Amino acid sequence: MPTHREEDYLEAILHIVRRKGYARVGDVAKHLDCSAATVTEMFGRLSRNGLVNYEKYGGVTLTDRGKKVGEDVDRRHGIIKEFFMMLGVGEEIADMDACEVEHSIHPETLQRLSRFLQIMEEDDGLRKHVKDRMDR
Image: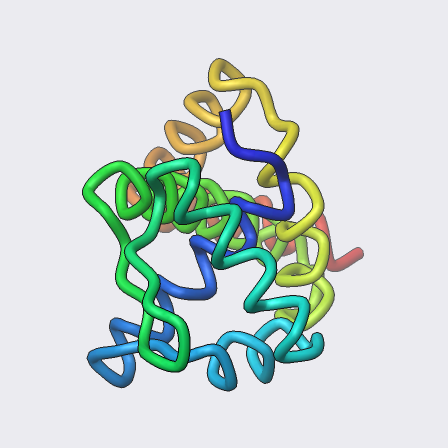
């Protein structure tokens, strides 16, 4: 199992590759607000664990396993962030909090949150009622 920090890196690489088509040390360092040396060290660790393909002074790509982990973290993040925003939390705070919760949420809880969001999406009246009550 990847550590929370490794999950953060895999999610960051996934986002950068989706946006640019590739990721380099500098891209990830900027995205995660850390040093290039720290990123290089983590890339080595992720490579040894079979989660990325990394060539020194080159780019990094996710292995199939690394992509699956990154996509799973990204999905958890999105569900949690959307839930927090539905509660009326601002996007920036919802994003920061989702970053913390995404690593420790139980799969059953995540499944129930996802289902709750689906129900709210399907029922405009219920969504409006909840929003009105939350905004009081």
